[in-house]
Image (cartoon, rainbow, N blue to C red; front, side):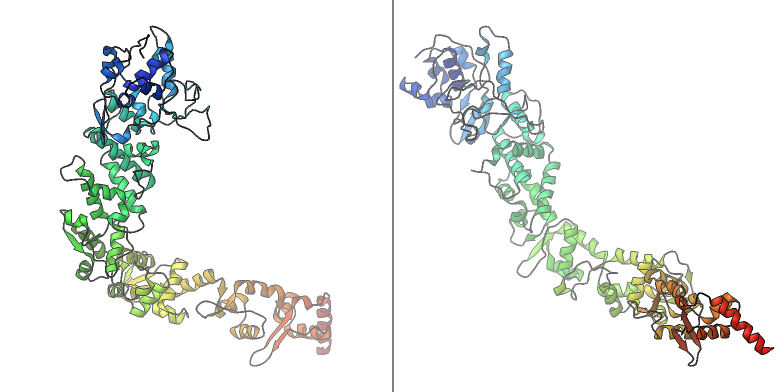
Length: 621
């Protein structure tokens, strides 16, 4: 079996691709079985071993064969165009192609027919590459004219260079476009293989290509699928999104790598290197000392020691050069509960559910120093009492009201954990203090919170503080010789006005003054259900503003009617009795208070008043 037409070769062709193109140009059907039947070693030709001997048996020129890409596919490694690759990264099972490259071949100038220019690029068979980075399209691997749903890959055993096993043309296939970012990793790999680099990475350039691809895959799978995704047998390492994500991490080294570790730590369900970093940690752990990628391990170990807890038997702790401090010993040293230390570590970015019995966690000495700084900004319960100037009971009531928020909310250990933000407590006091001036002693018109709680019936100091915050009231003065809440003095009148605004109601004195009646009359009206009173949250009896407004819209008294019609209250009462109008309220016990309903006043009340007054005058005469 020898060829009549001997086409020239291309420098980016493999021996098997050159042989298939020669079959196509000579009009001979391509078949692996046919080649074997003719006594040619098909598998050796596929692997690229001794191409001058095996291709020379077909009559192809040695000069043309020497221009081909050199392949060495020994297991488990391979060498492609002088670059080392993992054997799994080179495929001999399926044929992939870029229709845009073939269209470009047809448009290129040719000595003979244009179809002689159509050839396969060797990097199409690198499984880590899934796109054509020059035309920004995905490489095709199945014929769309066959059964599209089955997506049967086009193999090497049958068909021709530009046709599938069923004879369908592969030249006019449509390929899916990809973004420049998705094709960046493939552009880098093709540049390493062909020597025509258009994009680079200082970190990856220093590594052999097989190791660089392994790094890209590990980073990409962790970035896209999380720390627990498998690599071997999953096919995830042949996904363009995985490769592009991994290349982004490796391209901006080590900034993007630290960002990847931060993302894994923030989304981890617990603590510990295996939980946080998953398979990325296992791979980094296996990197030997002195390796070219040893900094991957050192950065991950530093990140874990800085951002998370470590068990006393942890491999990172045993292999790391930093000093470590046990959480419980640090808690004892700082006189804090271990959960307070855990809370401080969360502020530093550590992800944990908190230490418990049987878990002897430890942290780096650097983290321990930062924890000490954070603890210095926190208060224990005893220190909080001193800063607020209140008793333990009043402090607890302030906490129950939510005015002072504990740093840790643990129902089971609420009495054992003392952790309060000092800055937040100082801001709370400053909000109550405002810009009040300092005074040596309290004046007549200002009172402390304890006095206000008693005089204005507002319950405890915590109730008064809660009210001041709600009403946005600030102190009128601050005592010099006191600290905390007892030093704050408030104007009682301002507090009463705020109560009217907050509760939308009046106390008895305010309601009587607003209605223009005495306190005794107000009490009579309330006791006879003419006026409705309510109790606020402090148990204080108050009259709603709506009741005060509608009172004179519904009721009237003899005094008001007498003033309106220019007569006396006695004449008004006589007219009402004459017209059979009875008062809805008539009390003469210790205090006279008569109340009529406005709707009951006769329409001819003015005429009746005039007639009654005339009779009184005649009798007097």
